[in-house]
Length: 301
Image 1 (cartoon, rainbow, N blue to C red):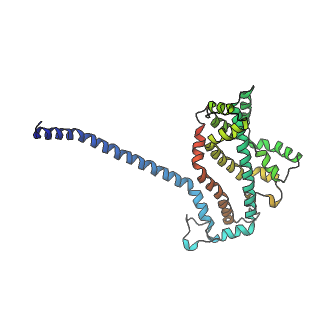
Image 2: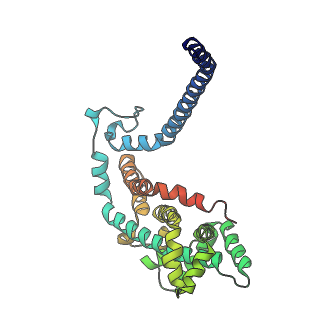
């Protein structure tokens, strides 16, 4: 092939490839525009969702005389910590905080252990009435929690656990929803792996503790966040059981600031804002486990 023919062939191939390059550029530009629109919409939705939290944070640094102003954020020169000072003067905030941390921590550990054990048994053991047990457990989820307050109160009172930490924790130590979540997650653990462990001489608890539970660690993280939020925000049951001020948890302590004639809304905002910071911090620490844990058992039957 002569040099002139070679040049003609190269030019013809370039002409044929030019529309493909143009089409690829158009597809790339369209994809960039679509992604930009998606991220813009998500950013706006996130900003709208977080706007109450942002306004609450701004209200805590607003001077008391300007609390009802409509500006979203006060100027930096007008920032004041008077709301936090009023909060710490009004209630024993840090004592209530420690009570909430202890109660939530013990409740989370108890719910994870008991729910994972129940989920492991329902997922990997065969016994008569297994489906009936699961059905009865799930049926309790449709009963409103308020219906259970009266019998729980009578049981705790009969056991002499009123106004104690044990009376506050024991009725919430088991979560049927947690049993269901762990069952769905443990269904994905291969039976062959558990059989191999039994052949090697592992006891049932060893199989649960050293094999099944580590394999569903994302679910442990996800349920840890769910259980912590439920215990941390609990208000009705603690206010029924607890009577002494030194036993109060944070939600009850902050609610004490509601006066008969006057409410210090700035201090209440400061207490509420500080009380949600541990939940936000825990969510950011466990957000990956939270997402993967809730989706791990989504397709298991």
